[in-house]
Length: 192
Length: 386
Image 1 (cartoon, helix red, strand yellow):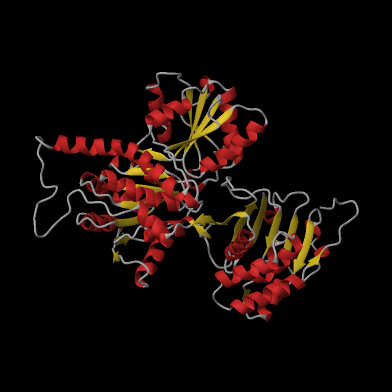
Image 2: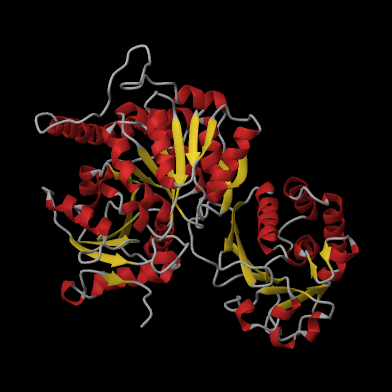
């Protein structure tokens, strides 16, 4: 079983990102669960969404406390210990950031990656400069980083689930796939 | 066709497949998507049903009592405070022997205000005369709505289908959506017990004095008991058509188990996950999931639990001044047992959305296996902050 936790702020599309990712994995024959953490949901408030997938039916029904991957949609959350809490020692963290993954010093015990999802989203007219909708603009990078899901499956899921600006979302996905930056792995660190 | 849908979508699709004719709902978190989806189906003409807008849940149930009296198939959905507001009319619907089906998205009752899952809303309607089914997955939600209509109409008794708020209602997972023709085959129109007919006017449920009231209640009681066998037969038929089997209680690794956990709803999934893990370590543990709470399957519960040394009941509702609600029912079953009489312990957790994690289940098992009865209370809280 693989567990993914997505952190963002209300309005960035964390819940939709979880649904698109789950549908893509489902298309590839996996058993999946996609669910939001419902707090008091407001635009700008920190939100989390979860995806579990496995080759067999999933029985576990609690939240995700020890994820294999963490996706951070909002750069201001990358310094928050809450975001990577419980992330497995060799787990991967993908951050929406204009910077290089090596700059994420506080995350160096994990496999780190970044993609400038905000700038990609804005390039394709997704959201506004104050509040870009970055979900599809990070999933391409996640597909490449995790190697768990194909970009083609995610494209099909976007076509099914995202009815507005579908083509722009697909373009953002592909751009995101090409724009992934992964931190070089230190020799002392375990390779996955 | 397999699709990735939420529990609330599963309910809505099942209601459409059941060809319900009158729907009256009032939106409430976390049920609202059901109201929205059904209203959309009706407005688009995808469903040939009257969607009646009402100003409260009380009116929703009153509307359906009227509609169902004409013999049409009726449905509503609610949660928490909404279900509590319906309380008076829940009794009326069952007393009038109307096979109304309702989905209740389990949510805590205030105060304090809370929108998350526990079972206090539906368990506090235990004695209203409604059949109650608790689901573990979105697939089971869809299938159980169909089964509920068939059972309710067979015994002329209303039925409630429970799905855990957010944990099922807002979780997307793969669900096999049955073909309309197969549902039509499974769910034919049944002749209503005593429909209103303007050409043959009668007064229904008028004042019934001490000379006949008890006879009405005895018939209602017998119908609800008969629902047990009806639910069993309907499940067998459902399995024949759709290939999925839903026993009233599900025993998992109970045969040689020394400790058996009892749970209802989605927490049973997490319990099963823990049982598998502990079995790998050679621990003799099992799980009994109560799917049908009303009618309560006393004999099945007995046969699954009587051979165990100890039973740990996980409740997501507590009766203040007494104890866990499921705990009481399980103990009552075992008191009748001709065989063994395991020690039974009651645990309460998951109130108001407190996440039920595997560690709680493991703690529960440790407590009953190591502590002995003296050290455990009537109600043992799991995950309570000190």
